[in-house]
Image (cartoon, rainbow, N blue to C red; front, side, top):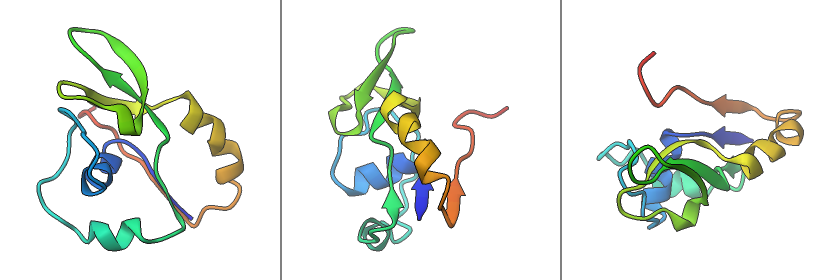
Length: 99
């Protein structure tokens, strides 16, 4: 099982044709179509996004609009983690912003 979190998930959502707004992403294709075809891949269901000036809201990944910037996984995604983390082979997460 592969669980990808923000910001790497923005690249995959973009490859799926989702609007990723102003989310941090790469302009390179690293074989995303092949990754998306993997049934073991889990992407966030919902995302905490900055929408407008200093306004943070939670949206489904498929509902991002121009101007939105994904920051973190939302509550629905976090709720699935306890069961998911019992059996992953790989968990990928890193900060969206420099520390």
